[in-house]
Image 1 (spheres, rainbow, N blue to C red):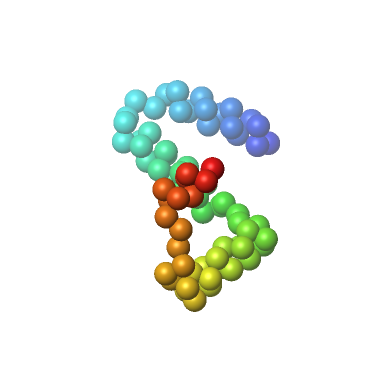
Image 2: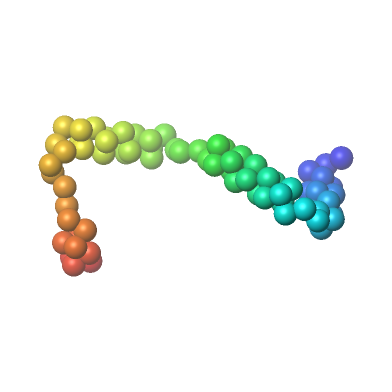
Length: 72
């Protein structure tokens, strides 16, 4: 069975669910799977690592949100 057919069958099963707890469990599992499968590109990871290192080296070198917001 291909993915499209499996999706269709799964949707049909969803319509037959009468238990709130089952639906909540399915939603929780889907959310968890999506979060676990999110990928961060190498470029974004490098940028995040750079910013974290900068913060560790200069923890007091921060901007106030009110100042940043004002400049925009």
